[in-house]
Length: 96
Image (cartoon, rainbow, N blue to C red; front, side, top):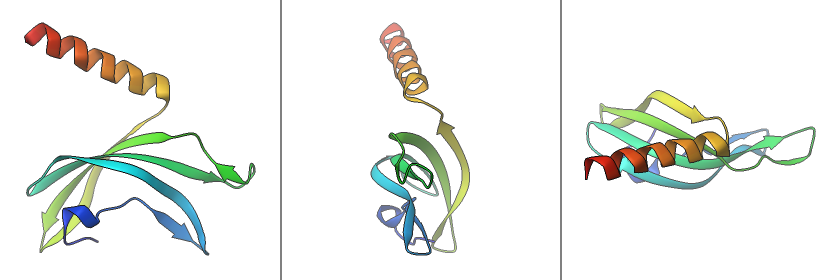
């Protein structure tokens, strides 16, 4: 658990191996409910290497001075990420 939004990470280590390696994050909103977009890689035991970059959006609720993970949406591929970006760009241009 993290007490400060900047301390939130998705790095995950087990038996000395970093299974989820956070590469970057963007805090999209702060407050009682915080939303963060992470770029990360998973460790692939069979390939003995990290996966291609992956992306996940997580929502955290601050309760008792700790941020608790409440929901997440894993973007399944670079293709899906591109579709999300393109759709949002189209919608924002249409509204602007």
